[in-house]
View 1 (cartoon, rainbow, N blue to C red):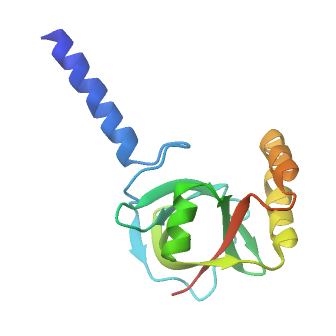
View 2: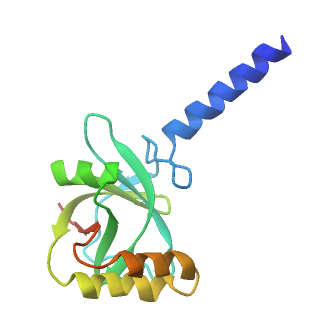
Length: 153
């Protein structure tokens, strides 16, 4: 009986890990309360991580860094990432900041990428120097990442 309980608990833990984004493990559900996208985003300089849901037949929710440049919100991810490939196919997405969830359109950026990536470096360097160092090293051409502006639909 104890063995069955342990197996059941392990399966339940795996299911939760698969359904919810935890750390670098993506999930399906974004949660939060749906809100209308504000006319102007609040300052996100004090927010390190948000949740982003990239739609597809099987959606993917990831916990990701976000930057704000000239009042607009941006996310970036590796070109080989599952959520990035989903956004390239279908730009409809959901963004969760705190307890609020917003429907957004992820617009792939092809210009001003150096400025946008510098915003990431400046924001995250103090708290994540090793990760930012790796990002800087990988930022050569061809760029291994995509950058998306999270626009109002």
